[in-house]
Length: 104
Picture (cartoon, one colour):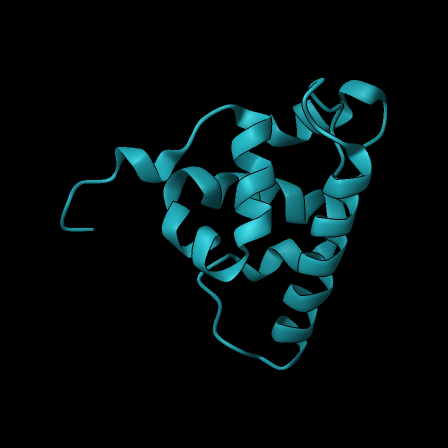
């Protein structure tokens, strides 16, 4: 739910929270739009996804669910949507993969 609050800092829950000065909204939008479209196609085809299928409900939910996955299953996000992982790492200013143990 915290991702929704961050998303709404600019007044709209649309999957594009206010960017930090080192980020570009155009890049964020392109990356998330492409990943969201791919994810929705996978859900429509009933493909198994490690990321919660609820993310296909809207761009705002995609951002929120990917944010959760970024912290809980970062390798999955990085492997499936590397550009999304990169944008989230910039946004949250951290790299959760760096905290994983050697066996993961």
